[in-house]
Image (cartoon, rainbow, N blue to C red; front, side, top):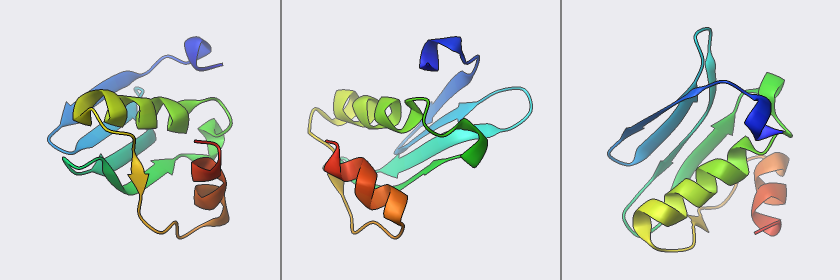
Length: 83
């Protein structure tokens, strides 16, 4: 599903953002220990693999499996159960 989406990946220190020309599709904020401080996917783009892609990028950047902080939403809890 993610292969069909057109978006730009913007990386700054501790933040990865997926954007297209109209909106932010999703982003995550993380630290060097691999702790995910925040992850968000725009509701219009959910269930397309973006959150998993963001978490994979965190793992690739930190060399560690992403560690969730306590999720604040039911969707966040579900995402980290899939890991």
